[in-house]
Amino acid sequence: MSADSGAVEQDSGGIFRRIRARLRRDRGDRPATLGRLRRTRWLLTGLFTVLTAVCLIVLGSLAASIDAHSRDRELDAGIDRVVTGLAREVYWAEDGSVDLETVRADEDLVGGPDPVVVLVLDANGVWQEPFVHRRSGLPAVLTGLAKASATSEETQWHTLIDRDGDPVRLAFAPVYDNDGTIGAMVVAGADPAPGNNDHRSLLLALWGGGSALVVLAALAGHLLSGASMRPAVRMLDQQERFLSEASHELRTPLATLRLYLDAALRDPAETRRAVTDARSLTDRMGRMVAGLLARTRAETGVGELDRQRLYLDQLVEGVAAECGGEVSVVTEPTAVRADPDLLALAVRNLIDNALVHGGTPVEVRVAAGQVTVRDHGPGLDPELADPFRRGAVGARGQHGIGLSLVRWVAEVHSGSVTLDPAPGGGTMATLSLPEAPEESPNIT
Image (cartoon, rainbow, N blue to C red; front, side, top):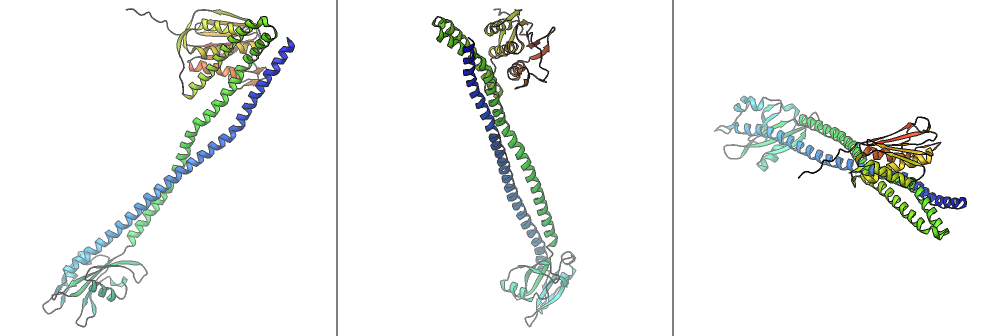
């Protein structure tokens, strides 16, 4: 039997070497996958930032254009009010001379800081300037512009450079004399510098605010893309965890199954017994896989737990019988509400862990919603700060994968699991679940 056992161990070792190789390959692919996820995250951040920047640039350009046109219209409207009002106040005497007294008396139109000039065409056809207000800032010669306005017979608008090198906005409004010909020209101007300064301030505010918004958008996009990547990272973790836990849970059943099959091949008389044991073992393996898949579905939100009222003592007795070995069970009737497959997997892990790492005999007690599994082994491994942590490994073996499943099952059922030193040596594991209330009979 020792030679057969060695062969089985060798064959099963080959199986699990392939499983471990697959796990190592998955872990090797994990950095590349995480790198692709990080690149995708930065790509999403860049796209979000670029889209935000383009939208802000378009909106800022529209706002700047609207503001510039609005300021130009406001400036021209003010000048137009002056030239239109003064053109109505230019009177012509019967002798053909021009009367500008009303113009001089209109402090509302000519008393401000902006220049006003009235040009009059004399008998020789030369434009004279009988009235000027703040003329010094205007260009030296206005005659050519006045002739152009007189020719067009409409108000003409010009932006010129004054004697100080600053821009000035001018309007030339023709005035008709008694003969119906243009005999005078009212020129009024305004300084566009204040409006231009306000416009530049607005542009600075738009660009500064837009830049700040782009930075905030980049930060928000990075955070949002990171949040969108978390489910994918969790899926990678769950995949790795599932493979690890499946490898751990199936190692012993596969080796045992091989023993049964080898015994059947070696002794035909043992075929029926071997097939029966193999079928029982495959049922157990199916329950293991179902439990692992149920956990994976529950953690990913794909499926829900199949909670039902069940008797914990009966479930533990069935699991202990499957585990075999020197396992004694003492139970009291107690009911809980739980998923039977997951709960059976948790109890099986506790018993298997006690058999493998604690040695025999193993004592199991069930009462008041608690399952206590005690072994008589060397006790808790001092190297393991948290034996329930997934993948925890100490000098006395590997505990974390199976026990992490137990803790997860306890948590999803609002319970707990503890490991404590047992009196007299060994370890005592306690799985506690809320008891289910008694169901009242239906009274009709």
